[in-house]
Length: 115
Image 1 (tube, rainbow, N blue to C red):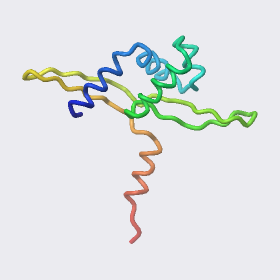
Image 2: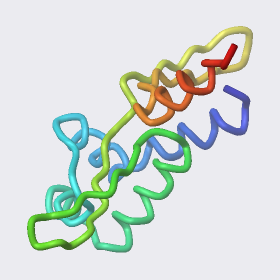
Image 3: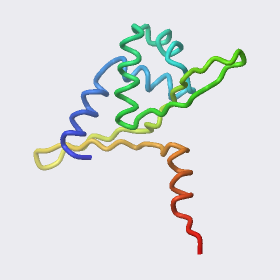
Image 4: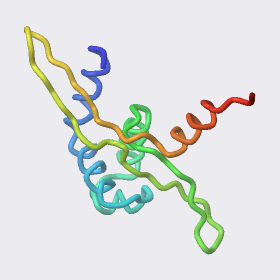
């Protein structure tokens, strides 16, 4: 992870709402409304953090259709662990991220060739 990404990751993980969201999503996937209730955050704050976490690849989103036919986005954490190391006057942040199943499937299909 480059220096700017390390800074961005640390800044985001220092945010209480971002940490709470990741902690709750580590139990089970949730929709934004459920996350907001658990974190007691405003709707805009929850969506902003989810967007930041998603853009860094720390959460994934999946479209869910409830029995009444409504579409809802469900979020799931991909982050397993965070490692911060300090050596020779610099630090590095390494994120252990679970590969998104859709990306894993795309990679498998992409690796197959017709002969």
